[in-house]
Length: 144
Figure 1 (cartoon, rainbow, N blue to C red):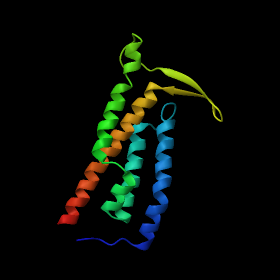
Figure 2: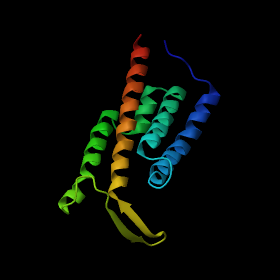
Figure 3: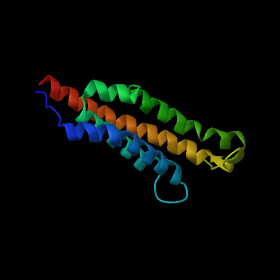
């Protein structure tokens, strides 16, 4: 049984998807010094795609995602583990936080860090996990 979405829900889905993705990136980048981080940012991004799924259909949601959610899980896990290697190469404990100041033309000095790399990995794992579940449930519902 296919449920047709309303015009309002479709319009809201198209409008809110990019806004929620931008907000999730804001939460991801803010999480090192204030509340936020990879987990909650990943939930917001997954909710954005899920809203798009409900407003459109499964194929449109998969197209908006660009990659298979299971690939996001694997990539996120690899990235999270790789974030511990720079400290180990410097003779410090695995997952010791390291910061690298980088001078950017318009932004000035920006500090990149291993916690940011770890949070990006968590972000990808959460998006992949939630969307794997949601998309599989939606496909099972569509078949029945």
